[in-house]
Length: 140
Image (cartoon, rainbow, N blue to C red; front, side, top):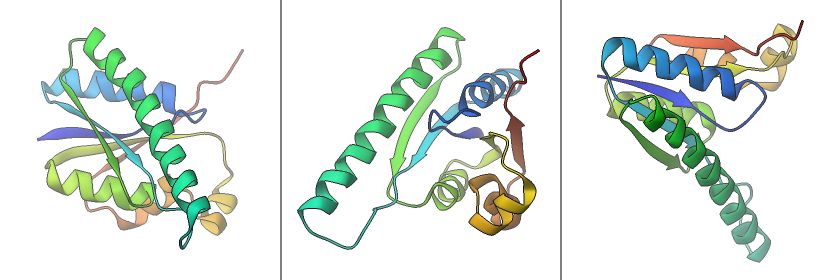
């Protein structure tokens, strides 16, 4: 089994990373850090340049998250998957027999998430694996 984390350096990602590391550590399971890099458009040079930029940004963010897991003593792997974030997480969870999918939430209203299709909202409706949706930390 494993713990799968959707990580994209969004405002909710830092806290979700800490929680995912805690859960993986508590269960003695590896952490799978996933970035969904859906192709942005149909074709052409602009497509390829944008696509590579998205993949590189995902890899960079995941490397920082990998370092945090390593520092905590949690074994972790990185996957950049050419799917939408929700679909990438669902596929990774199935492949790695995930105990839970962890994602950050950064303060979207429930209506906005339902209308625009936020990743946490999609996961809650599509995943057969439990989803832990971590809110951002509030400042005092």
